[in-house]
Structures are given as structure tokens and as C-alpha cells.
Length: 150
Length: 150
Image (cartoon, rainbow over all chains, first blue to last red; front, side):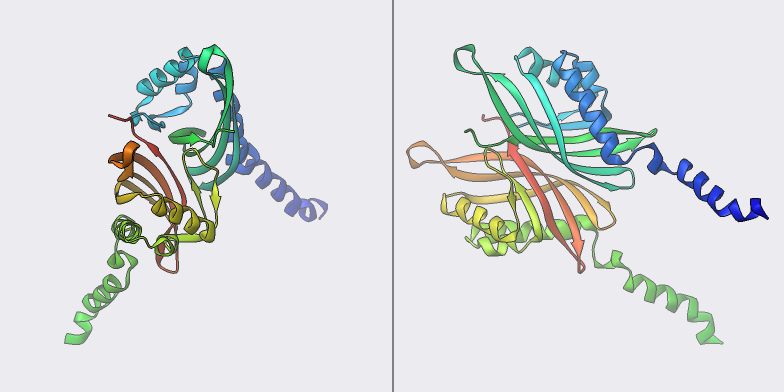
């Protein structure tokens, strides 16, 4: 009888441990991916950044054409790194999950070389459409623009 | 007997007529909403543009702060109209539907007053997150940026 009485509790514990919620919400998984993104960028590892995107992901950069596919995404971020962008920081403001898709609103800051070589802080906002595949979230569509200059 | 034999056909016809698919796909509904957006903008009707957004929708404009809520969205688009932007055209490149949410990739063109008053054509790309409510799709998050200048 004791075991039978404890059965609902045991079942509840097993269900809790085996639910995807235990593996991390989309928000916490995406927060972790953003940390890897910024760390890879800031050590000059464009391939590491590109690996966070889906193979057929796309960038929509300000003042530039749409960039399709992981190879081209790597080349784009290599260009940004070689151009002197530093200290990238990314922050998810909100994440909405719909099955294998998540919509993230975020904000970024970075240091960019300005006139005369001095670094200036730039800030902006972005929307990333994430796709989950093989248990991991990847950036699929990535669009951003700048905040007003101070 | 004749009526009974025809019953499955009648049921099938009633189901076909009453399914949402008959009311138009997300893509065709969004194409139609984009036409209303551009027509409203081009006749200077900022309230008509703002009415296409969800009440708690947001804009993420290049070089400006995030704009929250329909009232502020109307003020933003009124500013753009008063600033002389004309001949807005919007085109959905792709629409992915997930229940009451749709992700649209799009491109736009418009005429903007340049140096010396001459109008110049500007083109860009955008992502809009649409939400369906009351049978209609509304823009919920709207972010865009410019293509490279020619």
C-alpha cells in the first residue's frame, strides 16, 4: 500500500525529469547560444559564429545585400571582424517559442573603429528567427539595425 | 437512398466551403494587407497604416528607437509621410505560417527626398512577424533596413 500511495509522486517525478522543460527552455538555450556567438566573434572565430546558424540561414545586414548560407555568413562575419568590430555583446529581450521556431527580439552593442581610429560604441536592435533541429536552436534569419547615435 | 448516397459528397462540400483554407492562405491575406499598407501610406493615411498593426505591435526602425503601440506607430508613419517619403511598394518574398503567427521576409522600395530636393529611389529588406486575430493578420513586429546604395 505504501508503494501504491507513493506511485503518483513517483510518476510525477519521472514525468518532470523526462520533459523537455528540464533540458532548458528556448529562452535559456538561446541565451546560451548568444554567449557562444559573442565569445566566438570576440576571439575572431567567424567559423564558430557561422556554425550557430542553420545551413540555409540568412543575414539581412543594414546597407548590404541579403547573405544566404553558412559559408557566406562566415565570410560576412569574417569581414566584420577584419574590419575591426570588437566587444560584441548580445542580449535577448524576449523569446517566443512556437514548436521548432522561436522569435527573439534582442539588442546588441559593439565597439567600431570611427574617424581617426578611435573606437566608438555602437548599439542596435535585432530580430532573429531561430529553428530547432537535432535538439539545438540555430539562428535562421538574422536582421538588425542601429539605434540613434547619441 | 439517392440522398443518402449523396450525403458524403454533400458533407465534403460543406467542409470544403467552411474551412479556413477557403478564406485564403496566410500568404494571400498578407499580400492583400501589404497592398492596403502601401495604398494607405501613399495617400498620406498614417492612421490607416497603423490600423494594420496589432494594438501592442512594435516597429524597429533603422537609426531610431523601438516604437511600441499603435498610437506611436501611427505617429512614426505620419512623420515619415510628412518627411516626404512617397511611392512605397512592399513585396512579400516568403511567408511561413505557424498557427496564429507568420514570419514574412519582404522587400520594399520608396522615393525619398535627397540633397537639393530631388527624389531618390531607396530600396530595402524587412522581416515582419504577423499575428492572426479575429480572422485577420496584423503586423506585430516590423524591422527593416536599407540595401546598399547604388
